[in-house]
Length: 310
Image 1 (cartoon, helix red, strand yellow):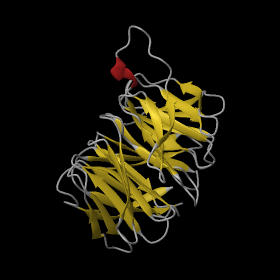
Image 2 (cartoon, rainbow, N blue to C red):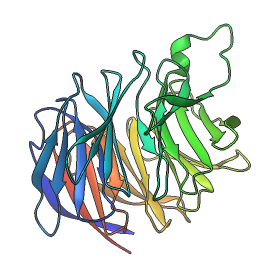
Image 3 (cartoon, rainbow, N blue to C red):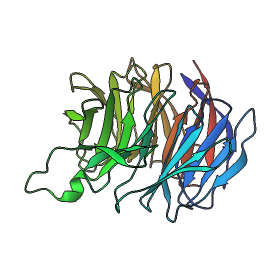
């Protein structure tokens, strides 16, 4: 896998960009910003033009997620999840959560996604919400803290569904990564190896491997079933903030506060490319579902779009 830059869109928002996601159908990219908005961008060919701005949050947008039915969801520091219809731009849901209880978010996979999983922040859990009732239908809790630990150690920062819909992975401030069984609503494993905040988690397309992005400057690969550490990859010079698997499973990308994007080969577990287009921390990175393009977003207020070659 090799990336070549297609376009750099500067001043895409009025403040830092922290998240991005592509839609399934047309070349539509969604970005979330500290400026409290979510923007939709038409990103076909050599163009990247704003098509709509979604408003309603009162604090910075932390995460965005899309589902195949044409919905976009956003989570923000105002502890609210908002869901919009990308065709009509109408608000479909507003889900209020307790203070500091929503961080990154993910739609349940499949054509009939009915739930949103939210990293539960200070609650030390993943909360699953129904899109129909707007209610919390499941709380997946991390193991209890030891007596000598600060409660902030279990602040949950990141969450991801496995593509087969059977598992949820989440990363916490203390470096632990929990894997939950979705259908049984129980903790399966706690993946160890990090001691610092895990900012992002991602499953491989076959749902067998989890990759983590951590403040310790490492990227860890874990076996989901055996809960074993496959490899710990180094190369970034600072916090690793974002990670995304390629749809074909051949590799993954990471973004860092060292202002770089790295391309990793999954088989050899080596870095094959480093990109330096951004001038500040790279908080979000996402593949188009067909694997042909990548978008990255940064504190520098820019969007970088890459073409992907095998």
